[in-house]
Image (tube, rainbow, N blue to C red; front, side, top):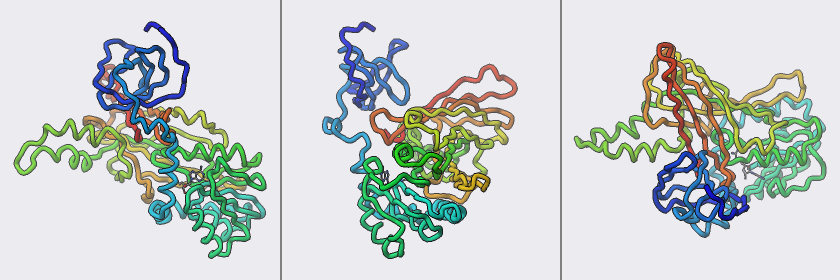
Length: 413
Ligand SMILES: N=C(N)NCC[C@H]1O[C@@H](n2cnc3c(N)ncnc32)[C@H](O)[C@@H]1O
């Protein structure tokens, strides 16, 4: 690749393919018309270094157009839409009606009540203030700073008054990044988890607030987070999205199956309820995060390995993912509490996330599914990521011919 001139602007930009481009060299990146690529560096006027679904390569600049001109100005955090959504009751009602989630935080406050006495607590992204109210009602903290950027905060102030907590709880209606507080805090509690743990990437705000406001030796709740994965059957989802086209009122609509595969299997399926009997192996913890040491830069790429021993024969339709979060006790010898959003626990509003393979594969007991998962944060749209899973299936007989497969799932851009 010759360098006519280099453009050192490193701000990634999103472009859309004007027409299909098929790579004819190993450093070139193929794409289809209409696909959104992220141009990382305009290395020359004709060839740019770009990324598509976690893979990088050179693309011809003449095949690309900037994604919708208005979008250049669009905030990469999409905060207007994001905080707009949280300004309505719909999402707060969903979170409050999630008993395992809300009860877990209540138990954390109750269990740690003695050590919370006289402490200063920050509740980051407090929403309706439920966790702050738990603190004020179930313990005797010196102060609780309830931080909420959306317009729901106006109502949160009323809820604090109506529940007699205004002496202890102060609501700050602003982004945590713009906050000024009278003092640092002993405990930073937040319910920040999104689908696949990280979607929305509110965790970045939590880490920045930790570095700005948490006292030395202070406590993060959650103190730790784990991403789990398992190979699974998804027979009913496969039937309703793929088999559906086989016999339609006596007609053969299977010509639509390639379209169905693109439409239903190319992105993760949120809110999938995995039945325990559909797990083909014992689930693996693939990513572990320590909320005291985790850095924002670590969030760009998180990698995990897995080896699954297939325990029973079944159809390998895909992988299912979920998360657990841990709440270390303020009494260092005390029990660590945990919220598990997996298939063996009571379902939460997150349920689980399903990653469908393009084609199901029959598995038999004794085979192994091994590989790795990569959570790659979107360099342009900062609340989004692409999950890439690489796997190979090996059986005891012919271990050598296990071919490595890979698939990337944008969540969502
Ligand atoms: N996936 C989740 N748990 N989402 C909960 C997000 C809650 O935190 C609020 N929130 C998210 N980020 C921030 C931030 N940087 N500053 C203040 N509030 C925030 C948001 O408005 C909503 O009420």
